[in-house]
Figure: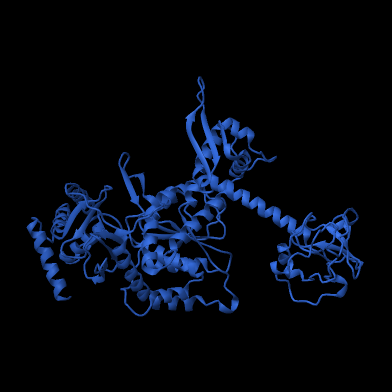
Length: 630
């Protein structure tokens, strides 16, 4: 036995004697000894959610729950046994002692034990989860390792220690070598990791999406391990709210792996975990007492396609697409684990360097437009200011894509969008009943299609944020005339959306015309384009090769107005520029009158006598085979 252990044992024996008990006695006096030991060595208090804790005096600033596997109860039993020559306290004595100690804790001022990260002044403290209670303190001036945390932390069985950060080269470059994503995606990932160490803001759910073989699960496990190592960094979707709350309460960061379907209750639970949640449950062995699990967490998720997400959850995602890894570039898991373990300390050091810079500029960052996750967006803007990246723009684009995915998976939303687009600038003002009657209804109703007006109004309310993102305003603040005073829904497409829709229609029409004008390949018999597939050649007026008349009028124009391709001009063309298909646009500079329709058959080719086609709005008609002008 070491000198420290001998001293501790003697001190425990003295405490027991001071409590008026003989160490050799057995019976109810054991409870008094346990209470005396606890009050001598630990500060007892209640957390704000009503849980009793004890923190060791002059030791690691770690809060121990009174009960549990690694709680104060087991610590007291160990101390008591050492002080009493190996005599083990009875279960009844321990239970009595815990009851007394809970009363002592309730009389103290409440304190907040943090998990893994905590604010401290203008900086952040990161618990390394070592037995000694070591931590890292990050401030706007830099970061440093500390032997004892200045803030109170608590631990759980799901937590593993973080390595002490070591400045050893470019840790971000080492992380880049481990991640299978684009440069834009990697910048977003780094910004998300920096924000993950800032506890007092909502964090979007990092979502790795890609097909099989893109390294989603391994990448997510490494990312979560950087922030909050655990024996189970990847977890399956929980079966109910209680199971989810237990997992989330005991970890700062966790990942749901291979999510294919997100149920409504889980979607709501994930949203609440991002912004802050509290679950109330009946206390163990009681009928009328409750316990509260409060948490705000950093979450990640991997998926191929999570199906139709709820709009509020989609707005809380940060989606990064992963690329398929070619077989010749695929690495063995043992190799990845070794590289990750070697780089972990350096990655942390580089992240803390960047975090310190972000904390320094963050107070002066102002956003002209605040998206849904405004606090996180400010962190992105600070990262962009420090690194010269464009993560905020990438995040906004990712959020818009997520909303579009939501609407693609909602048949009712698609029907509403179609109805509003047809209404034009005036929009629509109607009740939920009228809306349900007027939207295009599929023959076989989808699962989520509202069955009555009440559900239609509720679904429209839920879809409103996503609809606004794509430019459809939803206002339900007005009421209809008496006596019913039904709620009226005003649905209007914004001017930007109408302009974009008009541009898309023009583009589609131009593409259609271009496809109509494009030359077709010869048919199986080897014949060229006919009037049946390129217009009615018989109906067109033959163009004259001279500029002295005919449908084309003066096609010669001024040669100085355009630059045709330098080609030899046959004598029978009387000096008219031949050009080629690549210079069809050049001919648009010629002053033409009575221009024939684009793609219309004009007349026979002067060489092979096959029908010619006009290319370009004002281009000369040419043969699709020999490219000769008409």
